[in-house]
Length: 283
Length: 270
Image (cartoon, rainbow over all chains, first blue to last red; front, top):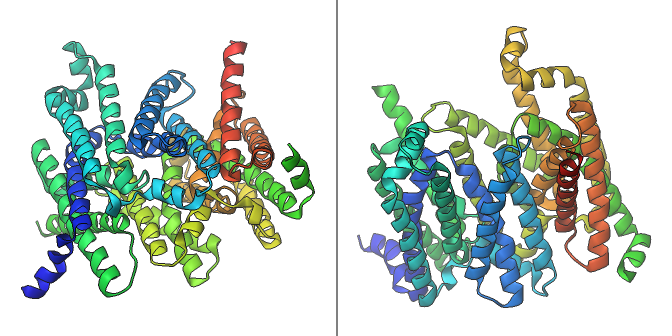
């Protein structure tokens, strides 16, 4: 037991490790609630696209020395609106419009960052975040964004589920279907913004898509899926961060903590997928 | 603009121009099929999923093309296997596999010293450092891909517009789909030296989307998309030299510029 305790609990006695775990748990809560909605609406690509489109906003804010959060918020809002404008043309389907936005926004970010002197290290920091470098103020900001995003989703829970399972029925009952879609996209943008400093802009999709997909295989009922997804992220965050700490402190092997957490989440998904396959075969 | 005049004479820049044009032509032509089959999300996913293959290949000193392509094909198989149960939709499965394999690439890369420079070269390309051998590889791979597209043209079009009809006529549609996915994956990997994995998405979708706004027929769209892809490569490199900005980003932005002009042109014509 003592060995296990040393492996799993001692790393979090270090303040920056404890802060990293708090951020992962917070993101896991928003990722669980939001991820299940995205899963029901099959919106994996929108999530993936938005996490890239905030990049130029972050890059411009970085170069101009402004708050990264504001830059990310502006870029996310602009890309959500552009997406809705672009898809009004019949010859441009949603997937193509998303690919266009991803390519353009990401390229814009790369060009902006390439003008700064510290190109390589800033690019890596913006893309992958610095989860071990978050401070108390950033945790407070992340918590605020998580509460706001999850709060909107909980408040609109009934309407969003109706929209997901029976859009025609929802419209017939007089619910503003298009505005509900916009709200969901904007909460995704909020989640991307909340995650950007800790896990960067490219690993976030793992927090939104993978835990919800695993929970879909394992849990019944929408609230249970949300709780299951959040719990899975928290557990994998704990194990991943602890493993990264052990590797770097005791074995001199540098393993990016954010990436290790995502790999742990993916491994958990694969185990659950295999387990459900076996369970179905035994039945 | 002095930077541009100086650059034009340098062998680095001339090699970069050839590479950008080759990649632009191949990616533009393949891109039309990407749009026909609604594969943009697949391309975005593969741009992330081939990444660990490229990283691992570079760590063990293996050919980057082969490493990226081999891992990409593994990922295609994983997507097909996980999607078979039908509990999860394709987009979700692609999202899971994409995120996981990208993180794996980052993880492998982080274990090496001096990782951040190599990492950004993979992500956004470094076209000015391509060698003569890189050019030959790109040209050979591109020729094979274009030949495959030409040879399978009739079958691919039938499969895109009328998959049931193709199956009823006795075509092996699953094999055909796999062949197309393989072509797209190889085209993606061959664009990596020029524009990097993330921006290769731009060349595989945006020129085709722009061409789609001018013409409705497939072959003219492929020719036009190839021309737009090549022109984006040239324009991007010139912008990059003139203003000292990242070449991969400038190439992708030039393609986006072509789309914006095409969209404006289409609006005016109506």
